[in-house]
Length: 77
Image (cartoon, rainbow, N blue to C red):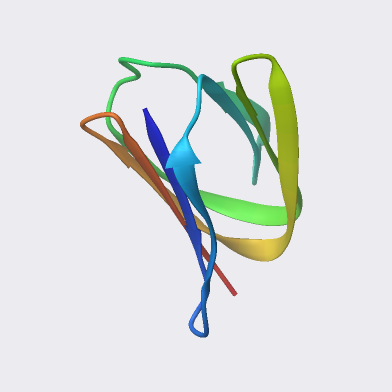
């Protein structure tokens, strides 16, 4: 699946991932391949992703996430 982390100014990350952990308003949640479509609010925390055993993360102060058709789009404040 593809993860895109974008702000109003730039693209902070875009690439293939195996899983993504996101700081949701109701707690941290994980998105895996073939995840159901969803839209959620994000709070301050880290977007943690993994691909082929390598981890990365992007700190966010809040935003929204849209999961649809194997694309996880994170729009941050």
